[in-house]
Amino acid sequence: MTSIILYGLSIFLLVLSFIKDKSKTKKALISALKSFENIMPQFLFIVVTVGILLAFLSADTISKIIGANSGFLGIILSAILGLITMMPTFVAFSLGNTLLSSGAGYAQVGTLVSTLVLVGLMTYPLESKYIGKRAAFLRNFIGFIFSIIVGLLLGRIMMII
Image 1 (cartoon, rainbow, N blue to C red):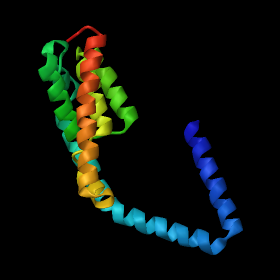
Image 2 (image 1 turned 45 degrees about the vertical axis):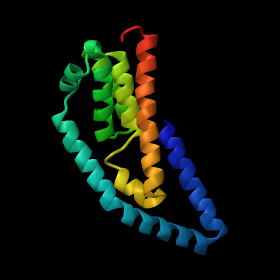
Image 3 (image 1 turned 180 degrees about the vertical axis):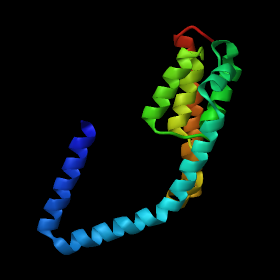
Image 4 (image 1 turned 45 degrees about the horizontal axis):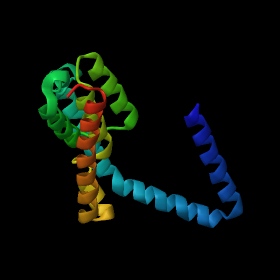
């Protein structure tokens, strides 16, 4: 339902823009298509690579590595797994639920989900191209450290570590 509302609003605003100034709207659409063309090859590479990685790392395999009894090592392994792969939030939360159902620990899943969403080794080349290498590195590094802190706090709160 939310998607329908957002798409409808976007189309309405595009039509409104077109009515107000046809030439600016056409220029904006052409510019957007050119940007899309430039980003698409890198984005496709990221999607394919993440898909291949996820094909090799099933939920059962991950839950064995980051089980509830794996402690701090499991948190670090979760952070590294999340660093390698990146996925949309709704997929990460679904994966986290599956892992919890398969016996993974809360701290480990919290760290994994946090790094999956916040940190992206696969997207670093694309990110550094647009925001700079230093900014991309700092964003990913801070996200990585934050994810480990989230896992430790979650483990303490859930009394599992």
